[in-house]
Length: 294
Length: 277
Image 1 (cartoon, each protein chain N blue to C red):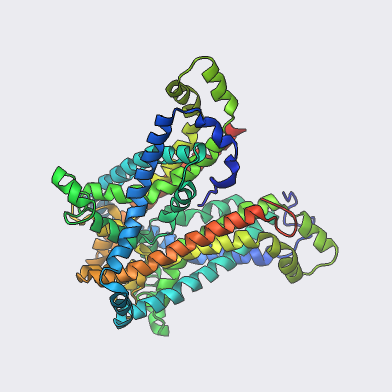
Image 2: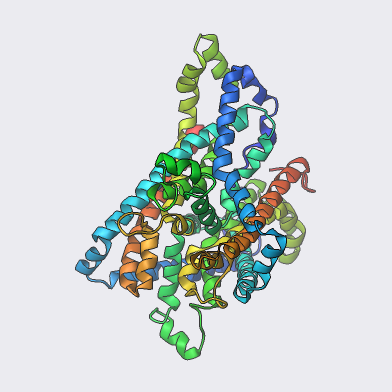
């Protein structure tokens, strides 16, 4: 997803093209600022202006006094981290298996990994409905067992996990491929057990990449809308996550409430960006303890 | 690079456990649900299937989904190339901030993007107050869909072009300039051919992102059948009318289209990497 492009790599070299005439530079920079401003900056400013138009107190009471809104915050705070945890376990297992071993079917698994990037979230939600819904494959069986998946927490979890599945794995696979297995092979030949190997050798080498993947996975998980909407059934105070709450309040013409929830999601997105940005710049400057830079 | 297979030649532990988790997660969370979708569509008769996926309303939805994604992708390629150029080649105040905020569409929940874009472009909105009198309806219209999809796709193009542009050898441009080529000609003859593969890949990524988008579009488009209803919105509509079979049939069409897009992207990527060598 994220390709680190800017930053330090263009040092010095970037100055070369300043041979462009001043008017051209000013024109292009001005156009770039206009594009960024209209598409990205103004929308962000607008969220906060709307959310805080009646003051911080009104904003706070919009968030805390409506029990359905409160519930949506708690729901997002439980669904998103659980999905991230599931995808972190998956990402570590998949990256280890796919980079440290060569086997038949490996390329197939690598390709399947990208499937959630291609599938529309709405289709993802529908797929889950078709398995776990009342008319789905497992529907009658689940009903007998008294387990509610669709229109309940497990469905939200499954939909969110589906959509965010590749994020951690996609971050780790190129990193572990480029690190190579030399250190791990050395550790094993010195008698390290599997857990020792993981905690002492592999994890320290990949921790920043892992954290980066987790941050991006979480940003996507908490913001997921289409997949979650299909499986949630839209029951206020029960299955509405924060993004769904934004829509419901908007449909109820409760703009202050809608923007208040949206502003919290925006703050979380900005925090994600800041963390990712800091991580990139920090790790670029500081070599990891093993001395390997990627 | 580990060359040894999973067999006795490779002393690393964890192959069995790792493979089990990988296959189990992929199978339960991804493969079986997608197969369920295809199987469900398969239970429809051929005539039922065709009438579901090829109704006037569905065709209008596909056309809009593809058209809006394509126009948004073209806009993203133009804007994205400009942004990548400015970020890589020039130093100016606010450059690092600009570089940082370009990733925002990847992190911002799409519902927030939709909410804000619908608010900005209505007649009383910050931008709508200038645009609507000029006849530019940026909310509850097809243009609204293009705008919000262009927002979502922008980082894909910028982040694909940026490293290529930064890695270009300066000698070529200098040679072109010393041979008397103007800036425009150098750009057209020397830079553009080197950037084109990245521009195509970035555009394809933005296009694929647009195909499946639902969350933001549902806020901004107005969702009028035949006019401003995209395919994912139609699927949700059908589900809310309890026409699960019809929804599934349309979903399969969308699924096939996105798989084709994904396939073309990996093909473009592999070609781009061969070219780079």
